[in-house]
Length: 491
RNA sequence: CGGGAUGUAGCUCAGUUCGGUUAGAGUACGCGUCUGGGGGGCGUGGGGUCGGAGGUUCAAAUCCUCUCAUCCCGACCA
Image 1 (cartoon, protein in one colour):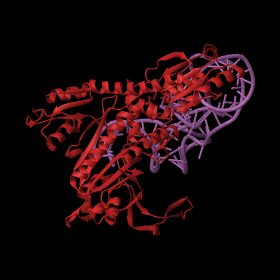
Image 2 (tube, protein in one colour):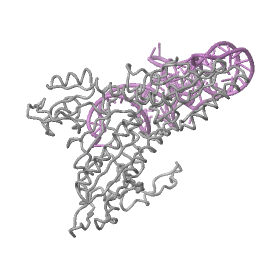
Image 3 (cartoon, protein in one colour):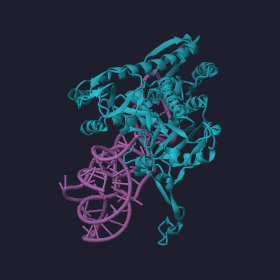
Image 4 (cartoon, chains in turn orange, green):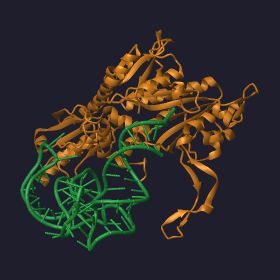
């Protein structure tokens, strides 16, 4: 087969770029750092959205929509928050264009300067909390549990398709609670929703944990994260859930009358996942032949490629294929019968492999004669000729197998690439030679964390939630530590 | 914002060192034909302000000046 992708072993990030383009997921646009998400890529995102949206609603959330623009003054209200985002904000200063007096196109009309500049949202805490202020007076108004599907803009210096773009799509949940405990519970609930989504749907094993102070969201008291390991040994932060304490309530003066008749500040959370999940999905499973998609998120789960010479052969094959299509549709399986006569079978095989379609059926005159069908699975590239009779049940089982198999493969990979180290030298050695997650003791100080980052570029991805306590000594300073934390190079 | 590089057909690039016919190739695209169980073969055709502006010259993709854009490395990146 013609090689269309740079092999992973040669240049991993080139492979990633090639894959995104060749699998028709997205491309760079005329706007630097902003991508066009193409129909096939968007179809995957839509499947993700559908599942997540259901999960949010099942945990008691409602969707709403807040403005794209945020008055500049809102950003001065929460100090840590503005520190985190100020350097990457797009700012609207004018509201009108006019014809260039020199006749060279259009120019910004200097007379149309805004009284107060508007910030294109990098995240919506500020606009939402300024709104919540009007919605909340009493404990009877709580909790408020809202999600919005939106685009946000962060003016990044260097961008990569899906992984870091200037504009990206995401969902952001913003909740308001009566008590600290209720807000913390919400934060944990949502990180669990994310981790369940990653593992069950994306077939992506993730580590759940909390961020250190250095890595925390700007304005949060605690940031919970799910961290995934990519095939090149680098970590990808895939979703975060923040316990915001009363920071935003205080910044926007959101108080409520409690049951006891006291005036109290509201407790807050926010949580989000973005189109970066697309990047995670692509990198986690795919190979040098192209994308490998988990069946649960594949826009096309089964594709049927007819093989024929002449019109009458096409008719026979087509009839059989259509029978399978309707059976699979009845089972809620997304199936495509590719009867496009303008492309050759060989071309189609390569194309659907590149696009990660989990199961491919080929049906030709030989199969029609023998009552068989050729079934190829994308994850292992195995081909098998099976009886036509009952093929739909075979396919359903196969889809489940593939979903499980790619999860296991990713799980085993992570296991092999998670290393415990007890000295800083060993840490550096593993980081350099192997990469992956590195479990080490750390003294809990920001200084030590920063030093490690400066010296090795590795960061603490999280303090894992489910690891058992273990007495030890910080690998750098030798000070006591009660638990290992997870280090890695990160995207 | 520092360091490096690149702009030539839809895409990937050659040609620029050392100025000289009508600017090329692969791929993609159109047509014809043979084909069809892994990106097929043969024939044929269309497609270019050589990033932009200015300059040098009999002559500029090629030399000079300016400019714009993009990419890579760094800084930056809940």
